[in-house]
Length: 199
Image (cartoon, rainbow, N blue to C red; front, top):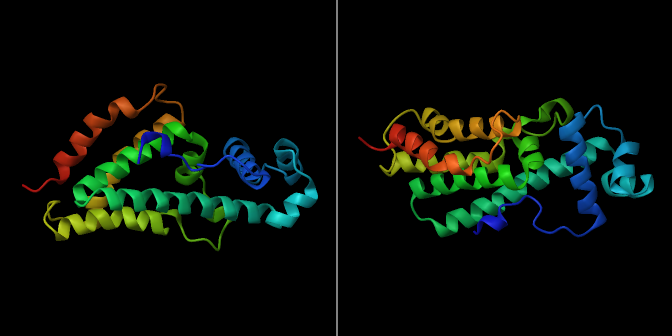
């Protein structure tokens, strides 16, 4: 998948999608509890009636946004799985995708990695248990099984594989890294792979 396709919202279009985008922006900027439906509708330029007809309530739009972002990550992972046969290559491609998403759509990535979803969506599974993140770990686990990644406790290996990249993304989203992070990718990947390659 080309870099330009690393996006959570590949099609701009409808008022429905525009309302999701505005909800994302306000939830990241102000927090879920400090965002009112009136403010959301005003900024999205939709009526209160439209909002309640499509989302039912504030938890409803947060739930749809959460599920949309995770579903989109699964589409991106489908592409990675199709294009890369080896688990090492799949893991590297996942990290490139995460870096690309952080630059292309920082608010969406911030909602995925920083929001405390269980506080306002208690019935949804924790983000680390969501299917996209389970699949990402699965690439690591399969890599260990197939000898591409050195043998170690699988959750430790997954933390080594993805933890430093997610930390770098958080530093970027928080403004502590004030330049695009993609130029750091090669040195980060080199360090990650050094800790995981078979001895």
